[in-house]
Length: 332
Ligand code: ASN
Ligand code: ZN
Image (cartoon, rainbow, N blue to C red):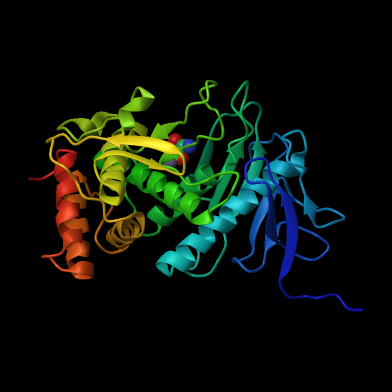
């Protein structure tokens, strides 16, 4: 009778998250009108520009297989929507800049490209298709990781080298886990691993572990003087570990069928305060305390200040923040 110009919902048949609802625009494109017009483009193996906006004769996107070029578009579009919803609903932040404006995603970048990245210059994120065993890099946690780099750039602005670089990387891993848990997707349940769906190592292991970062063979479990000269994807380890300890506590624990075992450098226990409170503390510290040069010691100070503001300096939450930093050898 008439074309409904309001909210459009398409159907995505994703590779990693099953059948999902996607924000789309009439006759039909991957344009999420309820999330700042976030768009998803097909680079079709190109490495520059935007390629073409995903469009088609119907509002059904992908078929769950990587061989269908729309599938990666559906996954990326879905991951961006989940991340948008997470920051809006959990932290009251509308979009990466907090101004309600969407970014955009590009999929099918280059040939056999095994990475994904955020760029401040285009306000966009980009995904490779993987190679060999490594699958397309469009899982929920990878999308959330990359989009969170945009949030960090537009809040603390943590410089991407040295200890601030490790904290920048950890921030993306922390919100990757947070978004994955919040999504509550049956095909991709929440966990404290990064990239467990994409099989980047070809042996079924994830890219990173937050309960014991050294399980990846390169990341550090604990802070030490000189960690600033380690690659930021490994100097992130202690901060990821801090977040795990603060959320779940030390010791052995099984969550959504995954077993974790988190130790402390001082051998003292940490009592977890739950993910929700830990996320509030990290986000508020990122947005109001951290600066471009924040290092591990300053991150401790900032998160303690936030815990004091939110819960009081005599609170169990404040004590757990202090204990979790001590557990990774920061402060005393
Ligand atoms: N996937 C990587 C990351 O987001 C890309 C990079 O090293 N910038 O950290
Ligand atoms: Zn990153």
